Image 1: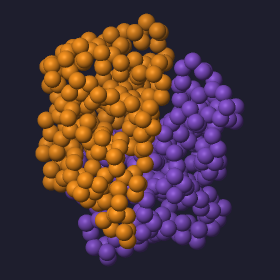
Image 2: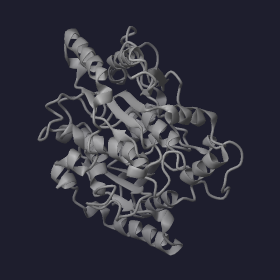
Image 3: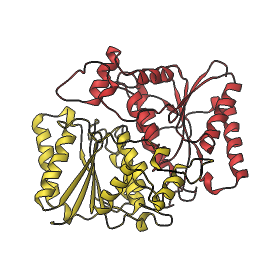
Image 4: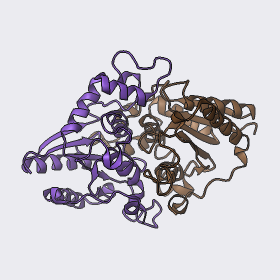
Length: 230
Length: 230
């Protein structure tokens, strides 16, 4: 709906890829709805995935022993996180919906996107114990993981060799998004696009556009162990 | 035992950290046993986590559309992967045991270590469908995930707010190591070391040294859904 803000965090090296197309489809469809859409194109930005001393501008809190979690928490409070992190946090803060678009790498997101999670979702900003899970600091936001796989739907079925695809969603949806208070919409998964016809890939794009038309009416999943493992 | 080769892939910024100490303890104990131990100290190496065109030296296989999986597979066959990857692959190839030592970040490994997985475990080297899982190309090797957590043992219990710790081991142990044919030893987990006394932390180091003394007699876990979710 008009006025809603969406941040798409996108991790693919190739604009011509299916991931690139899925991202474009989302920008187009959501813009058409009157949403304001921002994209963090991580590879294009050469986004830094490594959590280091460089994320704190100026002096560290404890110069004897470097603890990344403590240092970035303190730096957040002082306003002395590095600029790239402040920029990403602003985008997150403004967004009603976060869409993560990526190819599945090793049952998870690519390292460049994991680095975005590691570095942007700083204590004080995204969570602050006991403000986690349902009382996480990013509550009232939605997240959606949209990804492509190498393995087929059969491999990722219960009883398939790679196990139910939901098993691998636990760390990303529950461990990251739910931990920060974000409500999670059902994932959007394109299975094994490299092994299907061009026509099938086009259908995948159409299905995504179609889903986005009614996305704002969707109810979040019940992000508890039952959804993943029962 | 004398002659066994161990690769420790280590991801912590601070040598004085508990992770740093756990790494040193492992180097000392395993060396004492006559093992030859190699450490990949990822932050010290400024290891590149991003999967990009730069991982292929010279021309790409398909200059129209960049597909990281295909390009690195082809480059592996041609011997034209970037030098940092060739170096890591040599270490893996020679190792009987891989130890991953890291602080848990967001229910998973830090991005710098995820990048090691994404970039080093190339198709053709670590797996080559249908050579995956029990027939993965790194069979006859062992892996062990050794990590520290922020959350307590109670939070990571079945029924705890963060769920059974085994849930989050699935992508790392099954999705990566088992996929490559590597057998997985039970994880070594130090819960919430930042919230315990100095004495307790020393006990954690002693317990690790103790376990390493009989590590070679351990049986791998049965890396199937039952181990993780039952």
